[in-house]
Image 1: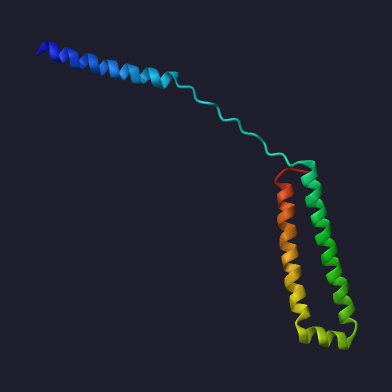
Image 2 (image 1 turned 90 degrees about the vertical axis):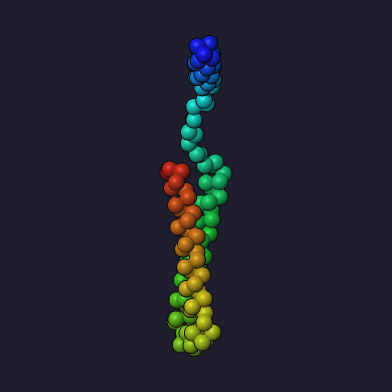
Length: 110
């Protein structure tokens, strides 16, 4: 009986120490956090998109001013829903511009 007990204890210690050895020898790669960097070409492309959006918004405002300067043009534009569609387009452009500006800001001052 004593031999069986000693054998069981030795096996248990052997398993414990072998598991400990495996855990201690396993090497974990330290995680290196890389800072995201925006390529200059990509930043320039985004800035160009923002400039085109600004130009489009300015063109809409210019057209609105022209349409509002004439009573007949204003009536025709109102009847056709032109003002509503231009407002929707402006909202979409502003949302896209905001998204692009925030994307650029996420990489720092470009």
